[in-house]
Amino acid sequence: MRQGAVDQLASYVDALRPIIYINHFDFHAVDGLIAQVAGEGIRCVAFDHALGMVDFRDGHPLDPPGEACDLEAFLLRTLEEGFRRPTFLILRDVHGDLAEPKVIALLRRIAEWNLNDDTYHATIFVVSAILSIPRELEHLITLFDFPLPSIPEIRSIIRAFADGQGIRVGDEVVDEIALSFKGLNAFQIGQILNLAYQNGGDLDRRDTRLILQEKRQFVKKSGSLELVDAECKVENIGGLDILKNWLGRKARIFKNLDQAIKSGVDVPKGIMIVGMPGCGKSLTAKATAGLFQIPLVRLDVGRLLGKYVGESEENMRRALRLAEAIAPCVLWVDEIEKAFAGVAASGGEGSEVTTRLFGQFLTWLQEKENTVFIVATANDISNIKPEFLRKGRFDELFFVDLPNGEERRAILEIHLRKRKRWNRAIDTIALIKATEGFSGADLEAVVKEAIERAFAENRETLTTEDLLAVAKETKSISNTLKERIPRMREAILKNDIKRASTPDSQTNS
Picture 1: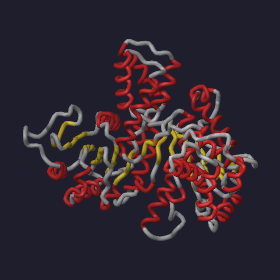
Picture 2 (picture 1 turned 135 degrees about the vertical axis):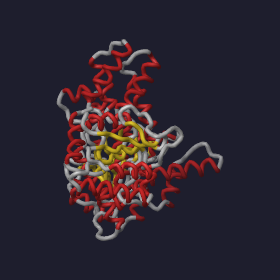
Picture 3 (picture 1 turned 180 degrees about the vertical axis):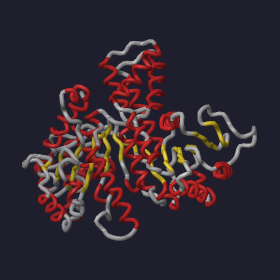
Picture 4 (picture 1 turned 120 degrees about the vertical axis):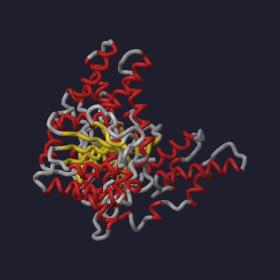
C-alpha cells in the first residue's frame, strides 16, 4: 500500500474525523490499509451482516453461532462499553442501514462523543462499494478515496505474478502491459493476469488486447458510461483536412504511447469540436476512436443526476474513474452545452447541482494525467462559460462550418459509393449548386431518399435528376436554423477557434 495513502488516512484519524467513508469493493485491500494505520496500539472491531461482530484481525465471529447481531445492536453494545482505549469500528456494507433513524442517531452519538469528550476515542470506518450519505450525518462524514496503483506499483504486481508463476517477462513488455493496466485496482489487475496466464501460459504484448476486452466488461456493468461502436474510418469524413491531419499525428502518439512518453511527449488530452449540427462532429468522435484503435465511451451527464444529496457528484466521480480504468480510451461528451445547461443560471437546486458537476469536470480536465482522450462536441457555444474554452483544458478547439462546394461533392460521393450507386454520369456541378447551405446530414438524406425512390420505381440507375428533385424538396439546416447560425458563428469568431479545414474546403459528412 502506498505510504501516502496510509499517511493521509492516519491524518484524518489524528484530526478526529469521526466517520470515515471508504467507497470501495475490495474489503481485503481496505482492511490492509486500516490495519497499517491502526498498528498494534489501536483496538479494531468489525461488523458485517453475515457474521455480526467479528474479530478484525482474523475475521472470526465474536457472536454465538446463529446469533449474529444486527447493526443497531452492534452499535448499542459498543456504545455501552465506552471507548477509553483508542478503537476503530469497521462497518462493512452497511449502506442500506444508513436510512434507519436509530442507526443514524447511534452513529451521531458516537461521532459527537469522539469530537467532544477527551476520554472517548472511537473512529468509525464505513466500507462499502455503494456510497450512501444521509443528510443528517453529512457534516460528520469524511470521504476517503482509496488510491489506485501507480505505474511503478503495477510493474511490481506484474513482476510478482510472473515470479510466482515461474515465467520470464521482459522489461519492455512489463512497461507496455503496465500502461494498459493504468486505472485498475490491484484486485482487477490480479484477475486479468490470471486470465492472461491461463489463456496462453505466458505474458506478452498480445495480452493488452485481453486487458482491453476486460475493461469493456467494466463499462457494460457500470451503467454510468455507454460503450459506442466505433467502426468508422476517417475516410468516411468528407473535408476537415486540418482536423484529420491533427488527429493522425495524435494517433501516432497513442499507438506508440510507451515510447512517446519516454521521449518526453505529453499524453494527448483531447479536443473540442464546435459547429453546425449535422456537419460531422459525432462522426469525427467515432472516427477518432477507430483511428487510435481504442474504445469509444460516451458520457451522458443527464444519466448521472440523482435524487439524493451528493449522489450526482458521486456518479460523476465514478464515471470519470471508470473512464480512467478503461484507458486508453476516447471519452465522448456529446452536445456538451446541453449537458451543462443551467451552469450560468442562478438559484434552484438543479442549477446548483449542474454547476458543481461542471466544476468537477473542469478540474478533472485540467489535472488529468491519464490516457483518456476527450472529444467534446457542441453546436452552440454562446452560453458556455469562457473558462471551459481555455487552452489547457483541451489540446485544441476546432470549428466545423457548413460544407462548401468541394466538400459537398466529396460528401455526396462518399454516400453514393457506400451504397454502390456512384457513377461518372452524375453531374456533381449541378448538385453542388443545388445544395448550397446543406449540412453533411442533409446531403446524406438526399442520397438515401433518391435511392429509395429509384428502387420503388424499379429503376437500377440513379440519375442526377433523381438527386436534384430530392434536393429541391429538402429544407436544409441553413433554412431551419437561419436565425441561430449568425449567432453561433459570432461566438466562434469571438473565441478565435481554429477552423477544421482549409478555406477552400470547409466541412464534412
